[in-house]
Length: 392
Length: 85
Image (tube, rainbow over all chains, first blue to last red; front, side):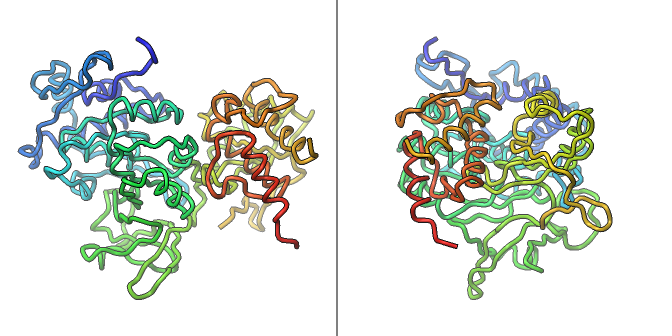
């Protein structure tokens, strides 16, 4: 087969990859999420709305997508039986946690499917999924596509040229990805006239990116989505600024320049307070009508191209290296991935070769969790209680 | 070639070396950042942080470009028009 293009995701193949535990570090959670979702959707109240179609596994040049119903596909039967046997304990997602400590959040279909729209106008949507499918944003795309019986094309983790090729090949109409993904795609400069909708989330969106996207994709509507692992999708905007829709007044509030979410909107986790502090910082741009933009986070998680990283996890990995006595990991702002990890290192014994430290990191961590800027220092930036000082 | 260009190639080589790619003595303006120089989004993020540290300018502020010559001319333009002080 020329070009080496793989088939798009079929739902059944997606599930089988998931069940096989494609991501070694979170196979159970990954399976729970998608099997649970599919089960909830397939057997839940919305069942009458669903006539999912699947794209065949045939060669891309053999006439394109082949539509089949769920019941025609043997492997789908398998996945449904798997889904039926799964315990109904909600759908578990892992949050980076507002205090930098990972938190498990249990969701129901009600909290996860809040933003899903099932309508005839969505019948022909073809989704390019460029989010991590186990994270809240990827799950939202999955739900929207599944509920409307749309084809999903896997674009996650692919280089921009491959993304462009797959979008063309499968006539993708809806793209859903992080701002970092769109910055890389915009650099390709390729016009994709079939794109009708670009949605983005997981990171702060800036005006320069929106200008560029409007220029390259003039026919596409842009949706800037604010979602959190704790609450699912909350706000949607066509630009950088958000307003509070009427149905969320009294459920979301701005307090101390941060977004707080009422517990009615949240999945289940250790939070017991009436209002949950998301840690996402806002700047109010106009008072009447109230408009605000998200400018960053207050807590210590670093957002590298939409992937939240807890610096202390990385410090633990660094401290495993025999030549490193202490490490301070932090985010550095940049115009490509929003933030990038950097590390200040205090060494002990013979000074290590920088490449050797990098090899150690590459052995233990995926690429986005590896500090790219390493600085060897005499001492760390610590506060009076002896803790490493984090920028707020 | 100016000292700015020299400095930029050094930064580029630093990013490439960390990825296990060979260092380059010279880079043509037509070299494509991804296909020819093998830089992914994290590499470009590292490059822009290093350029900002060295030259005090945010090269991709208005968007990422595709060729080395575009990076070079942006850095020259931004350095020349940098506000004093």
